[in-house]
Image 1 (cartoon, helix red, strand yellow):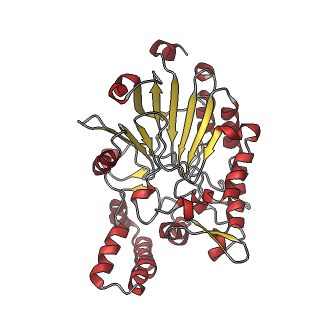
Image 2: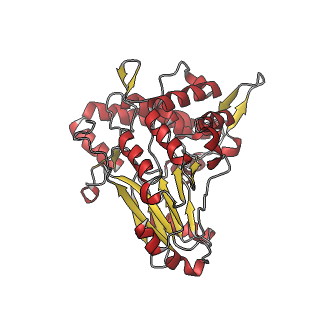
Image 3: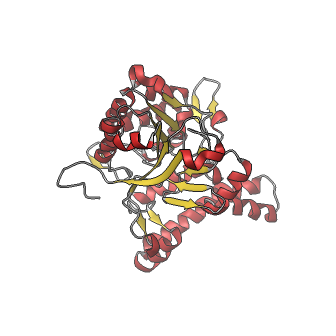
Length: 381
């Protein structure tokens, strides 16, 4: 690679998150409105580009930073109610996803088969069922003898691919979606295993998925308050039903939960406020993270689907890698980001650097993939 040889790049690190591959656009002959990923060709091109050509002899680490697969958006399995969270149901969902996006899986397989290529998979809240060891083995078995070049572990939450760079999915900052990966599996006396999901996962499967069947964009609009205001004005009946369903669900699942714990109303409302707290703004999040992790210079997250790059005066950097799903932003200041396939790219020029030399040895940036597919058309969404 000419540009990399000139800059003496010794390693390339790519970070993608929140692709949400699900059961495919067609399931049992019917359109699947829960499928959010429609960029299979672009992702295949992306993986091919960074595995060959100029990158063929360069070590490349692909970090999949959570929510790559979306187990919450696969309702077409023959498992209902709590059985939806069983190990058997999770395996059925995984197989449906792998079959629906076989082209992507084959591209991952070709990527990992190339010399000096590896994958690190960080578990998010939509692919949290990877806490089952059987799902890990099923997924890894797809890659045959190269499976050892993939890291997929319950204990992997904060990944540092190089000194000074920290990568985590970000669901840990919302109580609704946070869960203990090491202790999230419950086993019955019969030996059957179940995933114990956070209440936010129940919310997605019981509320969001239901209304997404009527309005496929329900989870793709930001900011949420603008969506609700717009909806009340122009889609009143649907929006009011959606709001009332949210209130009812939250009351039954969270208010009643705290009430049954015999807490007084002051404690209940304090707990509810924490439960409803949205993902922290990047500035406060970065400050808190680097105070606790002084060995890090860069924090990369996903989860919110809102791509961002901020460099602060103290030299720390915050990146949100956004999403590869179609978004609609009603904030005019962000009008153009909805269809951008964003990812973080890290170039390491000297593997033996120390933190004081971080800026000289490491380049970190947020990129967007434009694609190299030459088809004169794309899928209508």
